Amino acid sequence: MNDKPRLKVYYNSACPVCKAGIEGQKTKESRCDIQWNDVHRHHRLAAEVGADLERVRERLHVVDEHGELQVGFDAFLALWRNSPAERWKARVFGLPGVRQLGRLGYNLFAAALYKWNRANRHW
Picture (cartoon, rainbow, N blue to C red):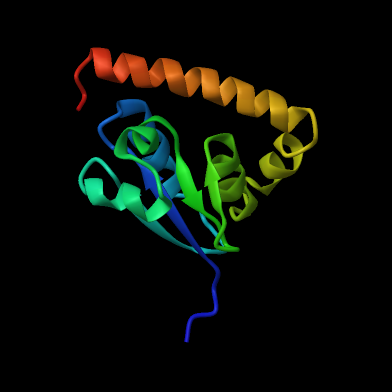
């Protein structure tokens, strides 16, 4: 029996930036089993997190080790928290104030990246 915690990651492989980021993340060690869910290849997966497809295309979604949905910057914090080499990022970027700035930066970047992907007809 596997008692390892589990993460479920929902991402959009049609976005070249997102795809590269996820491919890099997949090479990193994690204390969790990770289920990688590509909503570009399997649109119906977006419903698993209660979001429409476009919302998941725009922002990373993670069901964390506690079964809680994390979106955007908080999704990255969940991944980093469970990666021994990146745990320091979760501690630093999870600090009050820093976390709010991280969320703001992520949201601005994600919105611009989404518009760029749409303009370039990546889906």
